[in-house]
Length: 118
Image (cartoon, rainbow, N blue to C red; front, side, top):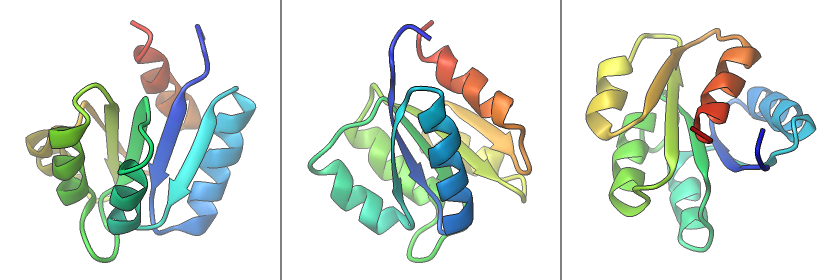
């Protein structure tokens, strides 16, 4: 890894976000979490992130709706969408750079994060 990344994880599953935050933090990244897209959009008004990782199914807005709003504002952020229900087309149409199917291996997510350096 060339340098640490600022990463935003958006998922209503607090157990999963805590797990990802711990894992990615141990890899040297600075990780923030939000539990729905609306809160994440508010955070993005005051902070930018190198990488945004978002689930599809969340309250108040889907991950694809969130991705579309973010992509219009943060063209340089790498956006990774994930879902256990195969919502790849929705994420791609919204502007996500990558999609991974849950359950995924942490090494798969880390590989996509490292892709940011290329």
